Image (cartoon, rainbow, N blue to C red; front, top):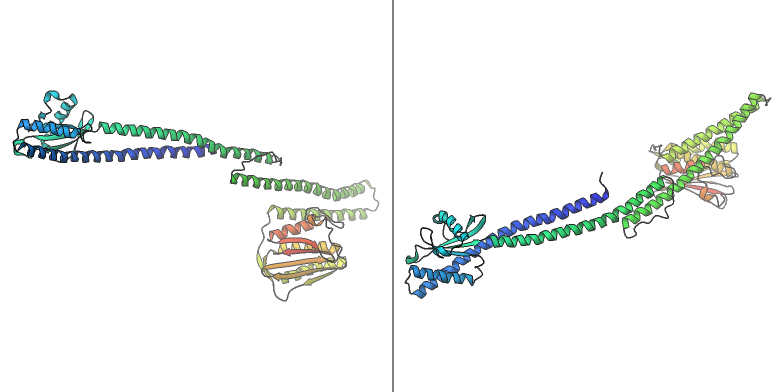
Amino acid sequence: MKSIKNKIQKPFLILLILIPLATLILFNFSFQIYINATAKNELKATIRAVEKEIKSELETDGGQQSEKKALNMARNILMALKSSHFSQGMDFYLLDQDALPVFPAQIKLAPSQIAYLDVIKVKFHQMEQGTVYTIPVNGKKYFTIAYSMSNDDLSNLTAVFALPTDHMNKYLGAVNLILFAIMLLGILIAIYFSEKIAAHITVPITRLGVLSLQIGQGNFDVSHFLTPQDTLEFKQLYDNICIMVGRLEAYDKNQKTFLQNASHELRTPLMSIQGYAEGIESGIFPDTKEAARIIKRESIRLNELVSELLTLSRYESGMYTPQWEEVNLCHLLKDYTQRLMGLAAKSDKDLELLLPEYDVMIQTDDILLSQTVINIVSNCMRYARQKVTIVLEKKGSTVSLRISDDGDGIPQNDIPFIFDRFYKGKKGNFGLGLAIAKSAAELLNGRITAYNQEQGAVFEISF
């Protein structure tokens, strides 16, 4: 498995090596084409200069040509070449019909020139005038061009110009050496900066990894962690981690509080059941029917508590998937009201339902919506003096359901916490009803709020 540092450095270095290398190869290829074309053009330009020199010599000599005159002409041509930009390393030969040198003299030829003339002797009669040939000699290359003398007395002589490529190759080698040095320097600089860039990225990530491990172990103190403030993404990531840590810490505290409250709520009926069961077993209670009645009551209470805990757990853990269907909310509320009439009669309270004159159609889940409405109405019944009112309204695309009572209202200190699990008012039961209602409303993509009116409390559900 590769580290982030390697994943950053490797492609970076590959690109920095391949691109200059490809550039170097392309440069060499292009430069070779260029110097070949330049050398050939130089030879052709040399021929034109020689033609002009020969014509001038012939006119000056009055038309009388001889071998002596030809040698003198060759010397003048060579002097003209040396005074021009065509002379760089160029050799000039005047050959007879047998490809033997007339100029320079045989005894003045260097070994490399003799080797060149030996190769030329084989190809001499196949060479076309004005055509540039590439002649390899002992590992060296010569650009060669031949020019036949046009005058009748000199027609048995041929001027041959040879331009070696070694000075061009030396120039190309020097350029390649410079380019290679630049490429090597660029790679070293790239390695240095890639190390810096990789460290700038990997060090904060490593720190965040340590921080996440610390959070996973239950340590939510992130105040000591420092993140680079000059990198937007790292700062955003750190800020998001801080938000996550706050939520995890709150969730952790809620879970601990939940377990403490749940164990307390479960222990009370269990202790009561255990006490009366032991009393019956030991014969302490002569009236076993009363003890059995209490055991039955506490068992029902315990069953209700467990049922509500399971319901809340399913909603909060995401195990429940809403079954969406389009329904007439007015008809549903009438049905819920009918179900709650027994509770209202038992509590000696009135339950009033106020509906609009038009139908209100919504996409909802009957189980979740009934859980929300019935739990809130049951809570309001507990605190109402005489009446609980349900009002349905629709404003634009928003459906609002208000459930209010005429009691003393919610204490201001309790309003932020009434939807928390096991948070109970003075007449509360388990402290789970409103928590279930809130979770059910949120699964319906709704929002539930609580506030006080002039008389009593109001719970408003919006979809």
